[in-house]
Image 1 (cartoon, rainbow over the protein chains, first blue to last red):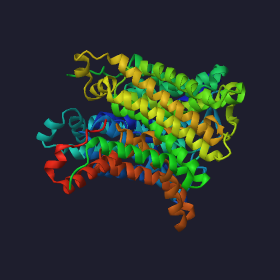
Image 2: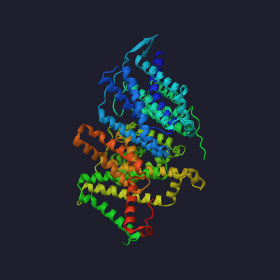
Image 3: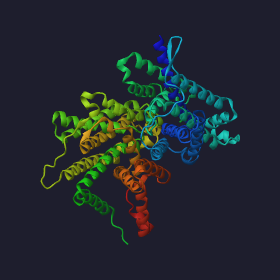
Image 4: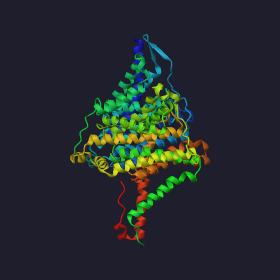
Length: 293
Length: 341
């Protein structure tokens, strides 16, 4: 039983990381209706910024973390306004290509600045597990879950309980009407991108101590984030979070209790993406896609 | 100035292409012949993507998977079963074509962004999927492909291999030309422009869309066969998702939907990374590894911003402008070239 709980905690920690990145994808999809293939690279870049703040500027983790997330927000806002904005009326192929171009540029720019040698990312939380009522629980995992939850709740509150969140939702749902009501739709789209990059940055900074920091670090994570987003419904932020946690726990339990499948986690996830897209593209919680012709 | 009749112009153009295509290996070094072979290989794969994405309107971010399978078919056929190189080409095309057909079936239910996601998953998963059955694919160690040896005294190995690639490319280009300029190509383009309108006109959506997947996968598989031979070594890890992306990006930069765009894309894919790397290397060796990605991304953005039809489109527009200036409007319009597919 204690082993089971430890596995669930580990799964939730991994799931929280998937959930943050999936949330980033979903925020952009709901805000502007496109999938940002560069999301993982944005997260990686923010993680490198955090690393620089920690090592070169000797800032405390708890100061560097919000600064890096803030920089991610501002940078993504700028990128949306400068690069993405002209393409909302374009075909989906075009928008996919623009995000692929961003993927390539962001990845190489990180390599340009920081190089391709993997580095260890410091974590303020000890890796040693503690014993709670006979259950060995990793502090690292618990902290990751805690930070993720705080960030997710903050984002939820921002979207659902503030004026700017309301304006953002209005701009996404009825851009023309929102514009007439005095909402600056363009700024709201930039805001959505910024928010997404911030959520992604959190996932990058939290995952970095578990893997090594290098320009390609998020390419292994982004597939799970896609799966989480598709599982929860790509237009449903809460669904993405639930999908991420569900995926994390399921993979952890499968890895622990079905050894023959432990090595096939990536394949199962890919299979899940394809199966879901074919059988139920709207995911567990998404609205079915209805189109007027 | 009198204009030359269209059919002579076209014949002259084809003759020039043939002379350049056949003559190139005699004026460049062996290594450059190999580089040109890579250009043709990428062009074949991009032509497949041109059919799928440029004509039938389905996005694939996972075509590297078909390239990988084609490479493994040739490697396994030659290494394990001692097959002749030429025998493995149709097998690779057939295997990948069938694979493409079966992947095209679920793709029918997916549109736009969802298909991009699913094929991206395929592209990301392919190296892992191919590495696992180590008994067949050699696992992490991969399979060594026998070197291509020229059967003629007067032809060096690199020159011979170039001609093999050229032969495959010519066949593939003829097939593509025939498909695209006939009924099938018209059906694909009508699906791309509006599925609803295409269906209303009695076009069998499922049939044509899966056919596009199968044909483009077969082309990618042929490219993979040649790529395995060119590398002399086939390993699952050399077919990362970046390969899939660079095939798509290259064909967009070249000009998707056009046959000549595939050749330009092949040139870009082969020479842009190495040239940009070497260019930056002169100034700062440590930064040069990042150069190919940045130039590729920036070039793609420039193309999307300013030249939707890629470099092929720029060339075509420039050509027609120049002709217009040289001939005057009346004559130029009198025998304007039929628009290429």
